[in-house]
Length: 233
Ligand SMILES: C[S@@+](CC[C@H](N)C(=O)[O-])C[C@H]1O[C@@H](n2cnc3c(N)ncnc32)[C@H](O)[C@@H]1O
Image (tube, rainbow, N blue to C red; front, side):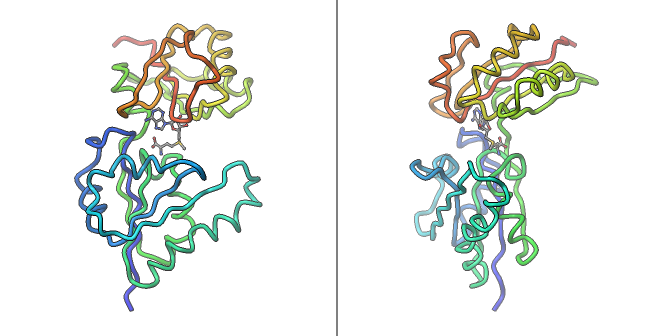
């Protein structure tokens, strides 16, 4: 029997219209769609494309426990992707939906590293969160020879400080409970006035809040700070 094909589909940062034509075609035509979500929450990626789904597909929901030590996580992740592998082995194509771009901090990568050698794989890039949020904020990110850095807020304050001092512009992702630490670093190195905060960028619930008015205990997972370039030309 011919094996199914694995598709990693970037569904963009939230606005359902920020989907590529290729993603739309594939997510409608695959007999199986798969998507990740936190244990107690609906899948954001599925929510983004819900209005386009034909309604007759097999759906596979998988959870990736995050707080685990990477080594301990391996056997769990292996198990998590098994239902996807089973569909592929049975000859069914599977479209794995991924918020933003699948290969940029994407949950699809855990599937990709486990299955792409065994199954023919195609990846459809998506509009990534720094691009979606820069457009929503209407801030030019980087000019000419600027260095643009993407920094996870989970880094220690000293690393964030060093990295930010070496960058002309930056996107700070995975804010959540790390927000206060990041805001302190931005003030410390004197670039807080340039930094812009956005939550759920391009989604229907998007909010843009001045950095100093953000309540640290209300910062959602889908939020980021963009530090646009200093340059104007
Ligand atoms: C695991 S990364 C996923 C990145 C995604 N694959 C992409 O290409 O944009 C998740 C982090 O991206 C940021 N993020 C993703 N989508 C966002 C959005 N619509 N608005 C604000 N931040 C977003 C948040 O900082 C979140 O914690």
